[in-house]
Amino acid sequence: MADIVTETVPWLRETAAAKATTPVSKTILDKDDFLKLLITELQYQDPLEPMKDREFISQMANFSSLEQMKNLNTGFEKLAASINDFLIPALMIQQSTNLIGREISYQDPDASEAKLLKGVVSSVVFKNGTAYCVINGKEVDMKYLSGIGSPVVSDNKQLDQLVDRLDDLLTLITPEEGGAGE
Image 1: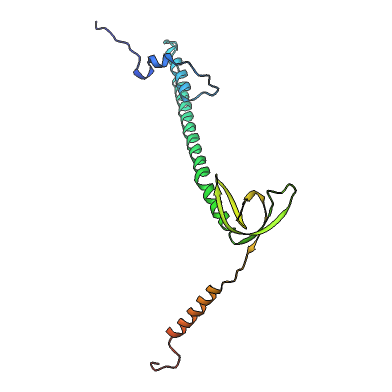
Image 2: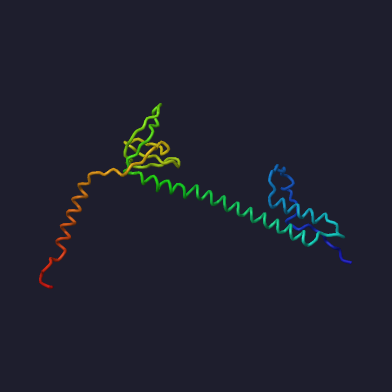
């Protein structure tokens, strides 16, 4: 009779590196722990009364569910990181740039007592993920804002001159009514 070789499957063999490491205390079981428990249960079951098919299928379904929940958790962690790293800063930029040219009221961050100031936002700067409104050359953190007014109307002489010149050009280009060609 031929010799029967019994050998553990390669992925279940303990390696020297695995034996050398000290086990880390874990408070949560993961899919690897579940698989180890299932394999141990299969190794020590009574050969005369093996595990019923229903129990085995149920445990495999639990393993599959555990793995899918782990994948979902990883996906949600990536989504949250993406939202925190990209979406929120982009929204902050969009919202804070709408303040440029508006009169706002804010608490003076340098005053020891509560002191309400007003000013027009000339620009917005970002430092370490925080938006600051520049008012009269001073950077004011947005957490000190207490009110936002309408945009300040400024005197646009150059814009008015440009509009007048465009009107003059339009009258030159537009054909006169009642001309020859009717």
